[in-house]
Picture 1 (cartoon, rainbow, N blue to C red):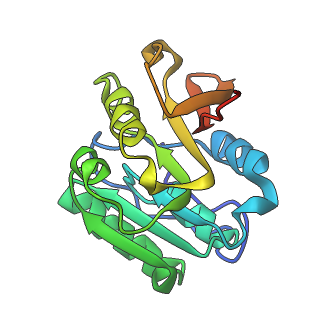
Picture 2: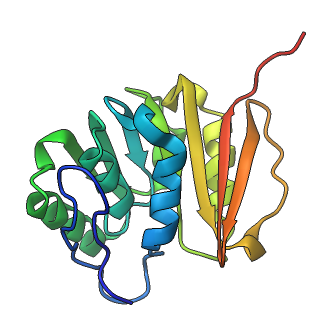
Length: 189
């Protein structure tokens, strides 16, 4: 697979460095373009958390398109190094924070900020996406009042999740990639 690139915005066309090996789940240009077409202009001045960041491709795309700030978290030291290099390459480092941490543990701590968009695309076939959603559902302070959680999985991984504070409002499939969009559950009386 070729190295990821930034599709639109201030860093358009810049190729990103990839993380060697198979520890990351790359997003295709087609899926990334579809994702940001759905978000649209709301990305401008938004805060974004790329939870299992890998190369940082999705969070950097958000910054390139006008997001105010992106937090990148990844447990892998090599991935964190690649994210930092890619932020320098795209000249977007000043709008980003990069933390090497276990995302599942990070989701459970008391939030020091909240995000308009939380993007969850963990390693495949380990149920990690469901664990991340469950942790976030129990700690909703990470998500801003009108925020979205976006999950990227292979459709074969999908299973119903018992959520008390979030609900799915949209799902899209693009070949072997499924995007699931959630927001805070609204009390309907």
